[in-house]
Length: 434
Image 1 (tube, rainbow, N blue to C red):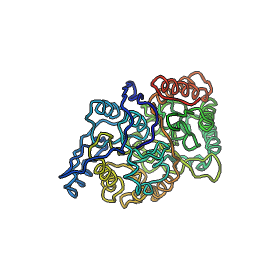
Image 2 (cartoon, rainbow, N blue to C red):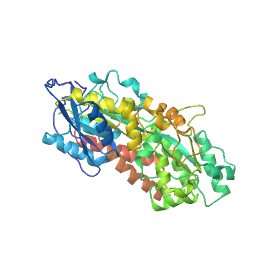
Image 3 (spheres, rainbow, N blue to C red):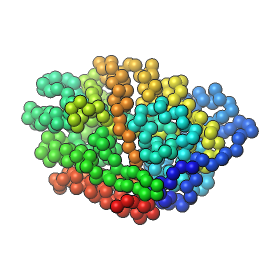
């Protein structure tokens, strides 16, 4: 039986709260042995994943997987909660890491620790920790990950005589130098519209926003590590050393394309964004590890990524875990995910795939791109997400946007996030320490 992580009343999607009151049963339930071929239903949004499913079905006639393509993000969470409440969820589902606690607290996902004893070592520790919620249970198999790194305009760095910053102190000094040398340029921007980005930066600094002890949750969105990150970026925005405009806007795209913004702390999937938003800059960007808080450290955070979970209601959990494990660890399967879906796999061996030897097309000059990315991925910090991450994220957007407009301390915005997160959890029946 999985350990309890609180009452079954959790916020679900970005604007919707679905309440479920099922008791915590988990993946320890006894399932009947199938007497014939098994059919598993699988919900996923990953591009091209149907090719991977077809590969499995061609090799495993005794366990047929039927894929149903879904919308990702909050949409699939809402749909899974609704289906589970109605008693007809799929056997398997693709779930983002930060959505796992919402589904676990609503008894949607099974604890598959017993069936995955030999799987843990196939993944970096940070990725595996995220599917355990900091407990002895296992609620999914990691599928893809988003280790964070620094992208920078190599050509402009050379023109301006800049060196790639190895620490955040050096990054701040570089930001000031850019403004002094060319007031039309910024090293980068701080985005109040992207909480996942900020969460990844906080992870690198050692943040721990949620924790579980039996029935009790600990919430510390405004912990010392996160406040350090917030105050650092807030100081740079306030002094004008970096921009405070959001990412993923036409203005931001133009700034990347015309060289107004010359660096971007992002994730391993960044080249695809740069190719789509800054097409004129092909071959001009390079990638390096994120700057570190202390010289000589080697840490990063994750921005994005997803897992494959098995539902508590599945009548064929053993078969479902077998497929989920194969899809995310077997060489042929992960190669298919890489080539058909352009994902960055979470499994350590898959990150050294033959299909990740050549650099991204947008980075033709950086032959060691994926070799470096694997080293960075291995250093990603673990993190425990909470059952109402959507509330925390929504509050981030409002609180940090207000802090930028009002020129108030970013750390105060964290206090707003903390209060909103705790209040929402308490409202929905969770026991929160302190």
